[in-house]
Image 1 (tube, rainbow, N blue to C red):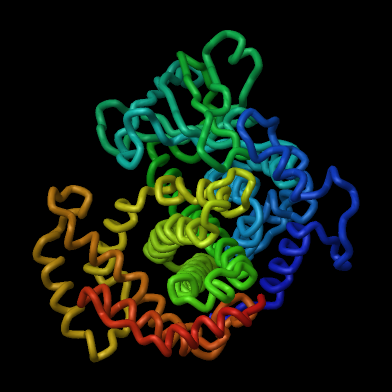
Image 2: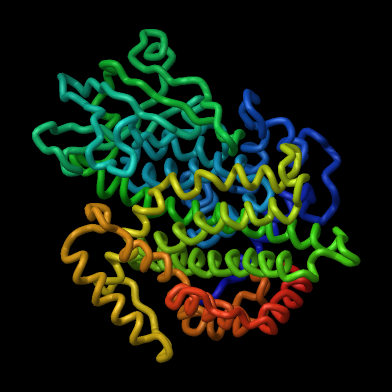
Length: 510
């Protein structure tokens, strides 16, 4: 695969705007348009909704990234969307999440499943940031096991009566419409009885009590993206609110949307990894202790190398998954790889960054502390990490994820696969009581796949302008050492390799 000029352009456009620079590179003087001021105002509990940020980003086309221009959108490809999300999250994950939901969980299913009337009514308003919508799947008793949702839509004359509750719904407190998944056939207990609906938020329904949208929840982080519950009590919706075909809401609706959305969460994690690596590098170069800058100590330098390495591996997996989606190829397994790796690493590396900052890293006003809190839910939404592990190991066993295994650990990987196949059979790992082997295997696979992608898909087109590691062979050597450690346990680290990597990262600029 090869990045195009448009991908460099969207990166530069978003990066400059998030740094409060205009297209000419001049500082934006208007404080009402200043992103850093918006973060202070909106990234806190009980803050008003960040509509100014939404409208600023709409001016860049970021509220309708994948919406075709015929509906007022930017008509960008999925890789451009992933790049834009990374850039926003390097600065403000909470603000970026507002747009991430609007693009991936709302605009995408509406465009794919909606009829022409629905698309013409809602997509143009979404694309310019005039309104926002929400995606209602999760329920109090059904998170990862979404196929068994209980919200029920009873068929009545002229439409449906909907009753049930949805929770943890991002943008719900400000949404003008809701994409909601409800059971329409109670005789079928699995996903086949689920349908999707596009439900306008009407004042009359809220006043009658048929539709109740809760106040924004008090979250640990990502405060700008308001999240609330939605309760339906015999809410009547006309037949025209059905989104797609009756009974087809789960696979083509919910699951297809979540597969698409996983790339956006991987982008969120990648942006956070970039941010904490940059913050840590700057701090470690300037902070002195015991006679010199703390970065000279391996206890500080090595974690920063790990942050940069995690950011680049996340980017490789993300870019390839988004590119596959743009080609119309099966990408969901690679989206799971990208989402699992980036979300798990984002929190771990953010916490490492906090340690590098010492006591100041615990202060609420510090950027690094905000990134720690903002990284916490990444391994939960759009499919928790164990769901991704199950998807990944099943795809690997079934031959849907493949890679070239180097000879020096091919036998071990083959033996591990044989043991996983024996334990899984035809089952999902989610149904096993003993999930240790398949889940531990799933955690190794992103490293193996990333190493293979560097040496195959990216071998002639390494996007060094996007990467910490301008030299891919150095990154491959580090990945190789990590794989050996995962397979063999404690492995003596190659000190000269890590020292070289640290010096490389210190001079990286992108």
